[in-house]
Image (cartoon, rainbow, N blue to C red; front, side, top):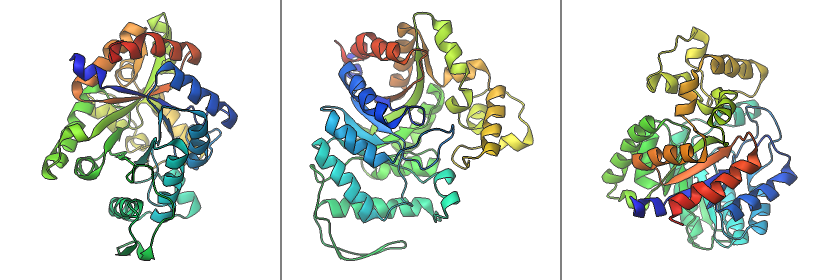
Length: 352
């Protein structure tokens, strides 16, 4: 167990859309100095809840220039808004600025970033596979001729490459199919918030995909992003989680799958963050759903309480197979939360 603990990595999810853009750089540095191993930004055009939503790769480029050690990633980009060569160039550029510290998080896409802008998103998983294939080949310096379902390249090449010639690609996967695909071809998995029980169950699909491809799970960085609230008084921390229940559990399907017997009206049963549009109707639906989420369910899907409570909860995720814990700091005093992680929680898992 001690060896396993020392291999656990901690990530900081930047407070987008809550914070002004100019604050993100200071927050990144503060978290890096506290011992966080990675810094993540959402790659969105629109967001629920509403707020300030900057372009992800521009933000990461600036953070790359103001940090020294932390790995930098998107959680997550999609294969629809950029040609794979354009995305590969963006990623390689930030990788060069950072000295080889970039991770590309990729998923099948979210409606709010696509539908309002008329961006095509048919066959998203097939498009994801093709995009990854093209980018990895371009990053090697290959002059590429490629005929695919979505993209055609003729003697195409990049004039900038990643420092390592291969940027790690993590999949934001949720369905059995994309989870197996993660095991087959991705370098890591970025899970949405899940209870430890649900995380363990989904990890089985990743393992199935890895076994099918002849890969070892040792080569796959299994991550999860979770909301965290830490105070000296556990009740204060848990009350903070109660205020954002529909963010902590992003769909009724997950709530029911986790075993919480909640009666839901028909118009909320199919609610999904991935299908949502960033308009008032969808915001109202998520608020209504949040009111129906039991307090204990929100606590189950998050890391909240005293520092000792949070250590115990993270330990649960580690025992399920999580190696990379990405945390969304929701306070109630964000500075104190960083202090708790830097002085107590992260050192516990690093053996310091």
